[in-house]
Length: 274
Image (cartoon, rainbow, N blue to C red; front, top):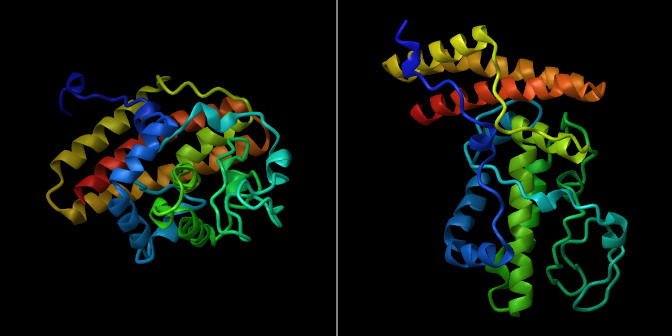
């Protein structure tokens, strides 16, 4: 085995979770400057035949950076938000969540009291069974994407930038088992220490050996042979998390998250080479 001291065994959860959500003004600025790339991202989803198979209950290799904001866990009443009238025509929403007014076709202001599960009409469960999540995501973007309101008021353009960004953020979070686990614990008020490591020598040795094998892999066939057991481990720890969360064994759930982080990281490293 190669010298272990040369291997960096730990990557913090913050690497997996990604950067903190930008401020409203910065986010709007980003959308205005990158609308073409956003449109390409949305359109490309329709041709992704593997997305639905990988994104829901089992761990997968979703490679986009994941974003969290402290505002996600605001305690404002969701019921109050859902009963709010349209800012533009005063129409009362017929269904929740109220992100878009069907009467006047206006994008509504962002309310952080709506959690990601509510945005997609899902029960707050770790194990997602809704096969229509991708369709719902694209339906929201057809209504909320900033490109669609470029000729409207500055106010509504800002609403669209905020709502579209949050819909994307929610989709990426819910379709990644690790980020979904972190998010659902935060909704329960359980703090996730994103810098905490695992001191299990067996796990650390295994991760190092996987990384060595990835470096030495000659072709995609060899990489896929390494990838398969890594994804099996992700499935195993995802199922363990689901069981712990269901039984409110939050210490066990946190341990599962820490282990999922290691396997998720090497999973992404392999996928980058394929």
